Amino acid sequence: MTLTLAQTSAASAVCDALLVAVRPKNRRIEVVGKALTPALATKVIAALTAMGATGKSGEITKIGGLTGFKAPLIVAVGLGEPGAKGSPEATRRAYGNAIRALGGTKKIAIVADPDPAQLQAAAMGARLAAYSFTAFKSKNDPKSVPPASIVLLVPGPSTAAQKQSIAEVNIVSNAVDLTRDLVNTPPNALPPIALAAAAKKAVAGLPVTVTIWDERALKRDGCGGILGVGQGSINPPRLVKMVYAPRGAKAHLAIVGKGITFDTGGISIKPAKNMDEMKGDMAGAAAVIAAVQAIAELGLKVKVTGWVPTAENMPSGTAQRPGDVIKMYNGMTVEVLNTDAEGRLVLGDALAMAAKDKPTLIIDAATLTGAQRIALGSRTSGVMANDDAARSQVCAAAEAGGEAMWPMPLPDDLLATLDSATADIANIGDGFGGMLSAGVFLSRFVPDDQPWVHLDIAGPAFNDKAPYGYTPKGGTGAAVRTFVQVAKGLAAG
Ligand code: BES
Ligand code: MN
Ligand code: ZN
Image (cartoon, rainbow, N blue to C red):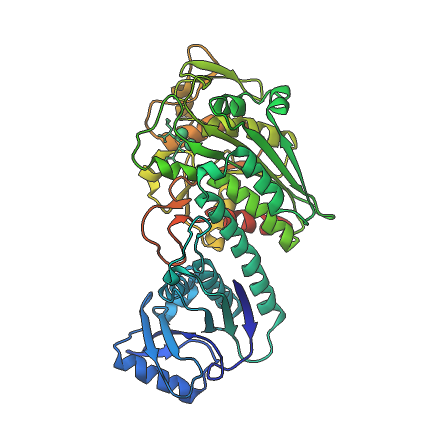
């Protein structure tokens, strides 16, 4: 899939479909962008009006065989009221819908709004929608094949800002796609060793060093959380560290991702219904791997350390039991009252290790709790932190990147619900505020003076319903764009 800029006029663009953005204006519609001559714009508007198009957000209207164009098909995408122009997310979604409506079309040209922010939003929405996961299909449905190329038509010589925008869209959307691929990969094809190998492969050729802890190294270093969760599987656990340290970097961002390659719940086994979706329980890890790739490719002047604790949570004769006490990397003992609360165990080790470097900021992303979906729904991630400024910084980055995230508290009183009669702490609370008590548990593995933000992406990481906007079914790539935005902010100082 290639996404490029071209100066070609809309009339002479050689493509299978020409995408034109329209919006309502004075009870009529107007064409967005300047790649159409006034005469052609009038013609397109007349044809669209005859078909009842209004330009409202998300509306898709197709016109075939309009004279004056080389393109055999013109597709109008509604962007809504002009005020909606202020929302890049509305633009991303509108273009996403349009690209999805064109499934099976090979070459798409877009009459783009040359404003750099709008151009980038259009490009990102279109590019993120051009995704399908077919690695395990013997035969592809032609309608599900994404376009091979998308060309953005902007009149006049492309500015440096426009070129930079498009380069960034390509890098970030490739990273989002990598995350989606890893999440969608079946769990038998992606055990912890394979996820660690995928991390290496993702940054091959980039200035990133990768270190992998095997079971022996995990034991040597006292990573009882990762080992405890992984001990029930024949596929052994791993810990991956990825370091990107460009010269001149002033800030250090550590990102940590939950990498449970399959979560059966362990001995506290989950119900069978939808258990297959637990192949996506490594979505946080996938986002970390892909974000390190994107940040290194962008060459951002910020040190980034990616941490991926990965294990398969299985029930077996060697699995950990409810009631087991394990010792974590930071020396704390944990009573494992529920083996299905495993994410916090692998993350506890990794967070404590990440904190040893004293980075400027630690952010973890994890498909941590079903309670996240109860509290915020399937599309909005929960953002918790031990530092209000850091939480606001990450929420703002999410907004800028186009990800729905919302601040949530870490109430002190929930710590008491994690009391254990036997160990320093239990791995489950009393069932109320489950997203928050998981966050409070994690906070015990980060020193109080270490800025840290926790993202619960349980719902947003995996779309089990129909595609919408630029979001496909299955893995969504949640948290990647937020990580990149935070890194950009830290690089800018
Ligand atoms: N991976 C799950 C959380 C999850 C559920 C993610 C649904 C995506 C969709 C996590 O490991 C888990 O099982 N959490 C338990 C915690 C409970 C035992 C305290 C949960 O949320 O039920
Ligand atoms: Mn679980
Ligand atoms: Zn899990």
